[in-house]
Image 1 (cartoon, rainbow, N blue to C red):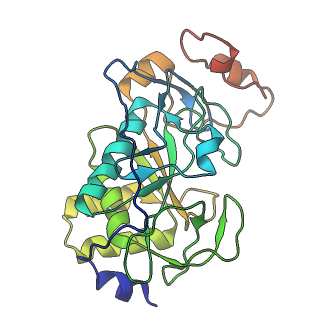
Image 2: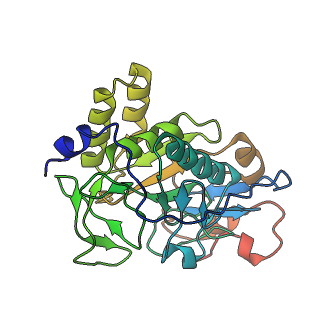
Length: 284
C-alpha cells in the first residue's frame, strides 16, 4: 500500500488507542537541581541527571529499554520529551510516543551507541498506526519501515523477522518534530533520520501548508548522521549545550576526536565537584 495514499488520505482521522493504560505524570519538581552536561556526546559525563518516568502523558518507555537504566538526561532534554509528546497527544488523541535509550545516570559509554554519553541524546521510536489508521501502541520493537512506509520486521534491539504489521504515522511524527523544533525547553541541534524519512516528513509538511520558516528549520535540523546507516526505525534527537552546561561542565557541541596516541583526553574532562569516580569520564 502506498505510504502517501494511505496517510495523506487520513490526515484528519483520529482513531482509538490500541491499548488504554493509566499513565504516570512526569514529576519534574521545582527543587530538581539543574543538570550539568560535561564533555561531548561521544565522550562525556553527566551530573545531577534528570530521570524520565517510565510513562507519562503521551509517552512510554517500554521494555527492553525500561530495564537498561538509560532514562536519564539533562533537565532540558527530559522536559523536551515530556512536553513535546504531551503536545502531540493533545493534538491527536491516543498518541503514545515510544522512548528508547537516553543516557546512564552519570553518563559515559552506552552499549550499542557511539554517543548518548552526556545526557543530550535520546532515541525516539517512530509513531505507527495499523492498517485501519488507528494508533499503534508501542511494543518492544523498533519497526523498520520499507519504501512503502510499511514495517513487518525489526532490526533492533534484536532482529525479529515477523512483528505485528504497522505503518509510518506521518501526521504524528511530523507533529513531534515540529513540537521539538519550536520548543522553549531546549535547543534541538539535530534530529537524525534516514534520507527516506526526511523526504516523507518534508513532503507532508508542504502538503499541510507549513510556513517557509518551519520548512527551512526542518530542512536544516533533519538529516542523516555521517557514517551511520539506517534510522528507518527511529529518530535520534540531540539538543545543544546550554549556556550553564558550557560554563559549569565544559560541555562541547562538537564530537570529540578519537585520541591518536594517548587517553589523557579522558582525564582532562570531568563534571564539576564529582562525588565519586562514577562522575569522571571513562579511561578506556
